[in-house]
Length: 148
Image (cartoon, rainbow, N blue to C red; front, side, top):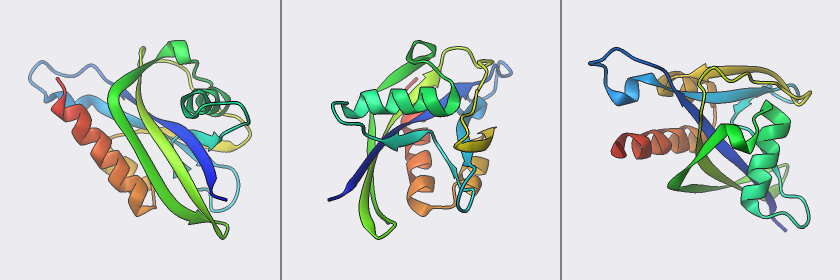
């Protein structure tokens, strides 16, 4: 049976110069795991029994980054499903896109992570080693750029 996990791609918009492009001020939140290869990832985790996917994404974000659902705005129309092998089993990860309402909101890491970064798209893609995660970040960015 496939392992199922859900999470949120979280971004913030920094206040920018009046003539800057809308997309210039967007930064994505990545967390560095405190185990394994210390890879960088958006907050995500396994679905608990009785939970739906979106509940899991919000719970995991709260547990791993200290962000409450009330501090986030879920972006309509974006949902991405990734499929890849993990520890010899198929894994499905579902991501939604969410903006922090206050770009200065404090991030509080759990013991599962040792660091976090707010990163512009190019840097976020460098930190996220996996090609499907890089593609997902780019796709989310394009989605945001297509909405005004």
